[in-house]
Amino acid sequence: MKAKIRALTRRQSQQDLRSVLRRINQILRGWSAYFQHAVAKNQFSALANFVWWRLIRMLKVRHHWTWKDVRRRFVTPQGHWRPISADGTDLFDLQTVAVTRYRWRGAKIPSPWPTIKPTTVSVESRMR
Image 1: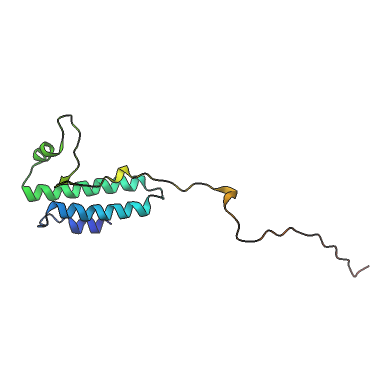
Image 2: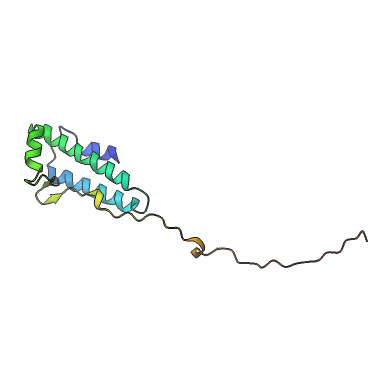
């Protein structure tokens, strides 16, 4: 997963940000749809952090920004971070994906084998 993100966010890449965001969003949505039924909330958070930093580093190199320029562009006057966006395409936030963990179902799972009641069979010994 990280290798795909690294390939898309090369610092010297000449792709426009909108196409990069579209492709990253496709990858993130597919990955999150597959793993949303597992215990993956920490992995979603770590991957979202990784993608955000890769994009910020790419933009810093591309536009010759300092960290001050990044904050000026992506922080609201209230101090909240804006999502990275280009021409109406926002970066997909993995942390908003609802994770449904495996639930214990107990005896609700039907058995594939027929239930056979044990019968008692009396066997007489030959030794008598």
